[in-house]
Length: 254
DNA sequence: ATGACCTATTTTATAGGA
Image (tube, rainbow, N blue to C red; front, side, top):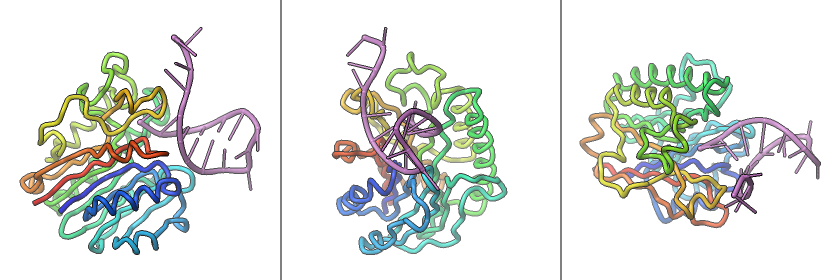
């Protein structure tokens, strides 16, 4: 079984690439972030034709998330229960016995900004909710665009980007608190070349020069860690014409 | 080189992303 996450930076623009990718990579579950479209514009028919069930939670212009799955999704939750939020960032469902959470974490802009404070509040709420979900669903995966690096190994220029957004101590402490619930970074369960990233700036020939960050993550629960046999970042779609700035991350479960 | 992008918007500049 394969599960994947991909920030597509506008599903309107990227739909043909998502369908191409699914044809080549027929994963069982794909979490999408940054749909940037309203619910009425979600291309459900295209995914149905491709053999996927879909859950979606859209928003005009910004954010928006979806879960595509070969099997139907049950017990669907939108956003973090009890956390008032006008931004569509979280979609959760049970698929083939696995509690799947797809999330688009806030960017945060810069330390000290309102957006940074929102990111911290959102992370607090997410952690409390994930802890609750984990207590009821031992087989759980939390995947998406976290907008946080674990450490300097996830950063192309750790000196130049020291304590900047995605790399601040506050964000990394939050990420460690999530992991401390009993989750594991699937990427680090395996060997990867140094400077393996999931996002590259559109500017400054970022991808060509591998000036990137690893900010798209798949965290698996203890029960799922035992089943996880691979975790790969697929750079191929980043080489497309008109690519997303993010690459898909894929895990394989036995 | 003090630069370089992309998407969406009641566009013709601005906001937001990361």
